[in-house]
Length: 553
Image (tube, one colour):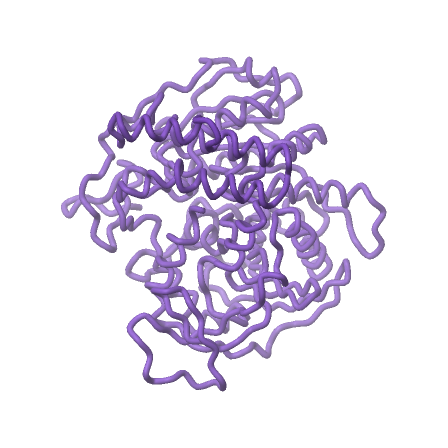
């Protein structure tokens, strides 16, 4: 639908360091909860975490059926033995969580020139952080490995016998070690992926008992709007059972950024974002003819709305797949004619933000060895993306699962960067008003307060449910507005109000402000020329650094 075609091509452009991966021989092996096996090692300081005395571990939870799920764990900078555990996964489906680790929430980031630098707003400042690649074949998680020649232009793999990389590679070919399973041997839906995530957490806590006496917090974005509600609900259901050789996971909060949650609402939001009422950057991409065609594709007889309704009613893979196919081609992908980034409408393609250099770094032999990786790194798994698509998973709503979490007294925080098109803030706001309940609908927007930062957005909250619109931010809010994203995470972690972080949230807490969020950025940060590769982002101006400008911090 939206992620893989862009992400995989971008990542493969940086694979010059790739080669066949030698299997690690130094992983510690531990039998763990729920019948899992865990293989891991301590990662040397400087590979990502650079703070003295803070440990990180990476490895695999073997969850059964030849599935080997990669994790990278970072201790909290404060009292890790008693800190809460935040679990991060990216969306896709099939997007590696190393995206979030290196571009968003982890302790390190990388400039376009390959310089590693410290993320001052890392989410392991005061919580332990577990980053998971899932479903299997995503990122470093593997199944049925083979040495292959990977064609980054055609996205094809050709198996190679032996361990020697051929010398006669084509321009777009690279030697890599990758997973080659069939579609029948991987999950085809979010609900199908949930048991494995539960097993990963069981395996982790069994292998690392020092970090097990804690609360669990799910953090995600994009297709994570499917993942987190479904995974969270599955965790609650499992905790309600008496399962031998397993521990209760104590889910305590969920945060979803720019989530893909409800297709009917969010396909309609493409019209809302581009035509009426429009976005807040004064960008009007379509003429009257295209706008009329887009409206008809959404609401005309037999078109997107009708097909999504049929998907909801029949709940069959075929009906949902048909809805996905029509709505994507005729509503969402009208945008593709514009040559603008649908993750950040301010930028033309190719967009140099967020920085992609880390992909090459993760394929460097010393890094693969340091983290105990068994396969080469790609940002996305086409197999997972296509398998979920074929099963109609994209076309199904996860709003009922969010309602289940809230009914179970699990706080849910939604936020959205307002320059993102693909999971835009207008659609997310409609969803928030539907799942938040009457008290949330009656609440008002208030400015978000973050020390040292001009107002980064607005928040509406009632009890344990909140929605935040984040200004000057694309799809990956922690990259564009790191202070604000960290504040949302930290406040949710501690049960504080999202707007200020000063009030402990109770059931009757509600923000009092304007019924709608009306701030308009205007077009000052819109770009009308393609930016050079290696351009640096200015976080204070929310725009690229000019040739005479100062460097981004």
